[in-house]
Amino acid sequence: MHAFVRNDDILGDLFLPEPKNANGIGIVWCPGLPNTPTAEDMAAPLSNAGFVVLQARYPGSWQSFGKFGPSSSIQGAIKGLELLSKSRAIDLATENVVEWSCNRLVLVGNSYGGGVAACTLALTDLAASAVLFCPLLDPANQNSYTTQPENDLTTLLPYLKRCHENVFRDIDEGEWSDFLKGKSILNPSKYIETLRNRKLLLVHGQEDKTICPSHTQDYYNNLIAIGATKTEIFLVDGVGHGKVLRSKTWEYWTNWIPTALTFCHPQGVSSNYRHMYKILCNLHIHKRHKTMIITRCSMDCDTIHRTSTKGQHRAVLFCRSTSKGGASFVVIL
Image 1: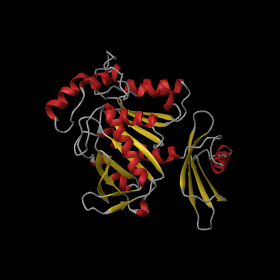
Image 2: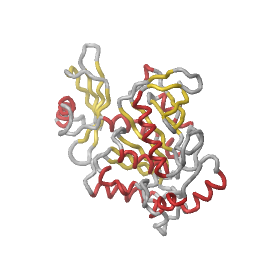
Image 3: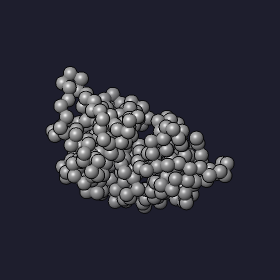
Image 4: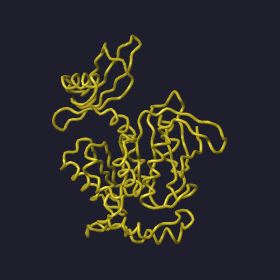
């Protein structure tokens, strides 16, 4: 189902899954610059996979009201999260009420929007995690790698004014200058300490000439250096900037979202999760198939749980309710 919705200054397209396929996860899409009103690969394919997807326009762009800029982009992402958390809205096209159910919200951003998603995750608790594709994480250090050429960000604002003046409106040149210098609220490097405890997936193509992947690798290294345990990085060979990166990694990141949302730690989680963690850590995995099935568990749920064992090993625990009221587990390393 598709609806056109509004929350305060922002308007956008809402894509709803069939109720039988819904997974309870809502995604707010944060696009790069320049952009189109909708990204087709981030619309129906995701709703068909069970996600509720909001593709809202940044304030001051396309149909949205207000002024466009770094700070308003973050405000727009927060407004998007607020809209999805309400679980109902008016479809402006039909004037009918549309409803959905989301118990977890995720930010997914690309390029400029990757920076928006990262900062928004740091500034609000409405989102549980974020997926950042070829993100702009450190605008002040763009072109700092002399051996890895990348786009000159100083050309972006003049380009937007020349070619998209009525699409991205009333840009404050002073705020934009601060953004390029790393002095804006839209600077993920400012929020390293906050994001240390948030769930992040960083995805970057090794052949990216727009934003070189070294920035993403540095950002990941900085997070790990201060004790981050919920951040992952996926660097993809032979891929550049934009849509192809999302399509090439589709299975990975669409599966990461639900599993990351139920990441289990031995402390600070519910008793059921601790129970599952204990089961997993005491398993003897079949050496050939690296898979083991446990039946007649007393737990009754229908979710995918992710955890990690000691060292660098990683496992995914699939828990499916059974007809007899228990559950079966499949553990894959």
